[in-house]
Image 1: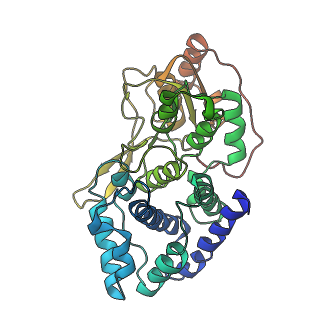
Image 2: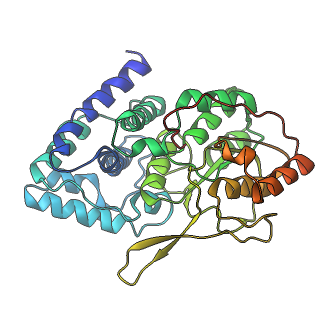
Length: 362
C-alpha cells in the first residue's frame, strides 16, 4: 500500500467520526484539536513501550494507558485531568496542550475515539511521512469544509509549493513564518531543504530537525495544530523546545534575523491588541502599531506585516509573502512603506493572482 493510500485510509477512518461528533456541537476545528491531543498521547505511549530505546516523554500520571483503563464518566474526568496537567509541562508538550479543553462530553463517544479509531493503529510504526501526511490531509479536509472556520488557517498547498519552489530554501538557511497558521509554509520549506539529506553532515541533519524553521502564531488553538503538524513531520522533538511560539509577531522586534521569510499573514484592515480582562477572557482592541524600527505608524495589518518582514529579514535574505491588493496602492503609510521597500530592498517580482471569493491563511 502506498504512502498516499495509507494516509488517506487513516484520514477517512478519523474523519468518519467527525460527523458523529457534530451532533454534539463539536466543530471540525475542535475535532481536529481533540485528535491532536489524543494522537500525541498515543504516540508518546508507543515511544515509551517500544523495544529499542524506549523513551518516556509524558509523565506516567498523564499516560495514554490511563485513558484506556478508564470507563464511563471516569474517562471524561481522566481526560480533562490529563489535558490540564500537560498544559503545565515545558517545551512542545506545553505548547500543544496550552489552554486545552475536552470538547467531547459523551464518554461513550470519547471511548470509541480512543479505543476504536486511534488505539488500534500503531502511529509510530507507520513512519513519519505517513502519519504526518495523514494529519496534514486531515487539516486540509477541515479547511475545505464550509463553515468550519478552519480555512482561515490553511493556505492551499499548491500555492505554498509554488512559492517555495521559487525561493528554494536549503539547509544553510533559517526559515520563519511570522503568521504560520497550521505551519504549511514551514512544512514545505523543510521538505525542500531536506532533499539530499543522506549526504548531509551530522551537524546539518541536526539543524534540519531542530533549527531550520520557526513559526509564530497568535491563536493558541492554531499554534497547537502547527506544533503537532511539525512534530509529526519529523521537525523538533516532543521533549525539546517548541518550534512554534504563541505570540503576536507585530508587538516588537524579536531580535532575530532569518535568511528566508515565507508567509500569508491574516487579511484584515486593522491590527488588534489582545488583552486579558478581569474575568479572564481575551479581549482584542484595534490599535496602531508603534515601533521604532517601522518607517510608518498605521493600524493596517498587512502594511504592518510588510514592515515586520522587512525588519526580520537578514542581509541578502529573501522573502515571499501573500498580500491583498491594497498594499500595492494604498496612500499615506502605504506609500511610505513602498518607497522604503524600493529604496532598500531588491523587489524582484509581484505576481497578481486571479480574484477569489476568499483567500485563506497559511
